[in-house]
Image 1 (spheres, helix red, strand yellow):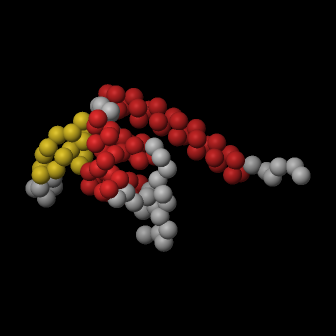
Image 2: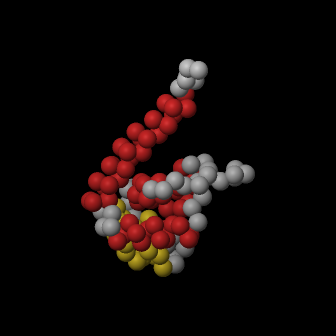
Image 3: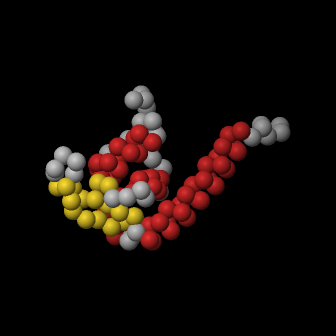
Length: 114
């Protein structure tokens, strides 16, 4: 685990949640664990951020939720990507990819002339 955590930029959490649920139904705890694993523990999502984001995405119609049983036989809410959510995931992926390339280009750019 890194000494310093990276603060998730506005909008990034929504994109990561959409990606996490894009492979099939999953519960909130699994979403948070996937984000941590996918980012080599650089991004850690706390419950106080995750669950309001899941509810926000559900209210927007990007994910749907259904109660079920977890692997440990506990009641859990499972989230699934909707058709609208799949469209949003594509749009946000394109936007973030473009943004990331622009930031890397600026970081690799030569110094400006004096």
